Length: 301
Image 1 (tube, rainbow, N blue to C red):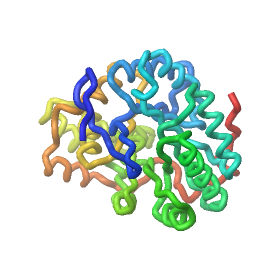
Image 2 (cartoon, rainbow, N blue to C red; image 1 turned 30 degrees about the vertical axis):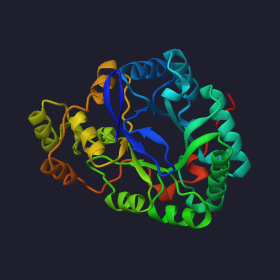
Image 3 (cartoon, rainbow, N blue to C red; image 1 turned 180 degrees about the vertical axis):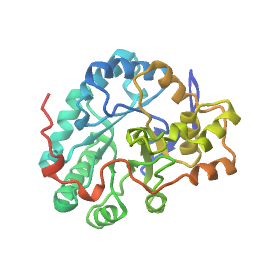
Image 4 (cartoon, rainbow, N blue to C red; image 1 turned 60 degrees about the horizontal axis):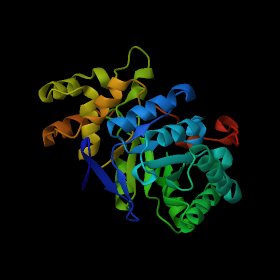
């Protein structure tokens, strides 16, 4: 399915509750508040209509300012944000929605997700998700989901709650594709959404490690299409049915990452990218997330 903006055809994903979401979004992880507004304004002007943020990023207010400044109608921009683990629990998560909505300057949020599982305190995670179910029933959010949940976390959650998450946002890029998790999501109607979709996290490794941006296989495919390595990786995600949320603060990169709707990878090229999976995670191990290690107070304003 595709929808058309003035900037051309853009892939969309229909979530398991019928809500339609742009497949390609703009992320603001680690984007400092002082540059977030300009970056998001640039993304919206480029044609992005999905903006992904989180309470823990500390830039929800600036995202909201950019959307307000854009002149776009509220229903033209799909807003996704995340509840941090410090705000888990039924009442606490209801209040977390209020904090995020206030900072974003909106009455409803399109997609609200739990940022991490808390494996050692999973009852609290379940209560947080039940709060999301309540917000969905009340029409304050249009879809609910999770982030960084592994199959065991999802299986436990599904047993104890009513609504299947619409989205599971996880680390997925050519060097860490998590095919088993993707299959688990797909079998249950959960859309896999990729963070670090072009492998930016691989650039933080030591000098002895390869980066996806300089991988000869990806660069070879890019040369064949007259595209960049980043564009090839985003095309790989889109053709395999995922959502992806690249991030950048540079206008030329923001535009480049959106210019991925005018070419297609061949089955052989898709398989070649699949073959780069190392099985090595770049981000935190989801099983190791605890309040003691990762907890932080999310401010009211």
